[in-house]
Length: 421
Figure 1 (cartoon, helix red, strand yellow):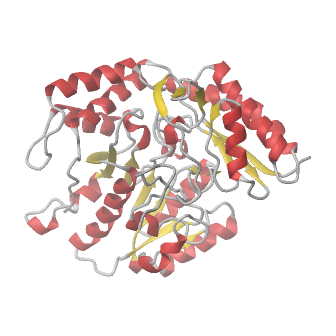
Figure 2 (spheres, one colour):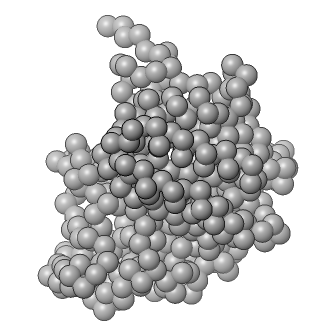
């Protein structure tokens, strides 16, 4: 049986291939622009799924990768080590709060979450505690596309609800935004305490679940309740890490130190795949044993890839030498001012800005194909999903390109919001 598809042999992400429009062919990138094969140049409003925080083709990162490529592009990490990974682990431990000192390097955000879940579960096993087989997660959350990560995503509204029968059963609560939700979370933690291995949360903003933000006080409440019930807290900072919320890590704004923290996306400045799962000393200590079976039995083939580690180290150099956090705060001010008028547009339910994240939520989902086409016609690359159109540009974006993005979103929302005239 032969099926003709717009992309030939390629199977596209999150795409119904039967009726999908042909994808656009990108041929080059620079700064905050994507050049297409047909000659068009688009302002990228989402930094390639939030990864390219320094913009595309930054010469410092490119130079570091080229130098590493000439020396050693890859070597297995089982029984061997190398300077780029050693330096990266040391630098991450120094940057992260508290005693988040033990860095496990993998190759994607979903895997970073899988490793975190595995760490939490095996921590209890190594301590001789049985029955800790579940995780408490929050409605509206998203943590990845692999099976364990899918199990802690929103079970009803998320993109993975079709897989419910295949996934481990977890415990879900609403974020504790008020007294009632806080009491419900406290009660759930008490009721399931002996079966829970950990609590997992996206600090300050639930990204792919709908760009839903919450104040630092909510995160602090979650951390406090997890601590009260003796449960490790996993902070999924895959989206929020490296300046996206206005601080280097979102957890800083709540003054908390999670027990396990996940990083990826912007870790390499958007150049290649790399992820880190970082544990506090108390978690790591549960694996420190004379028993070989107590070791963390996980090891992706390309973990700690030297090229990716070199890119990550170069990206950290840029956070040290260039004003990324002040740039993020400047973007926040411009997004807030530019998107605020959309609150008055009929058919708009909410406008949210947090750091270098701006989101407009429709009262009901628009025609996404039409919305995407209109944004492209305005020369911008923005990928709305569900009932959200959002901007997460490179932190290096200049004022003119940012204004162009804001104007494009404002124009399209005003024209196409369901309920607008």
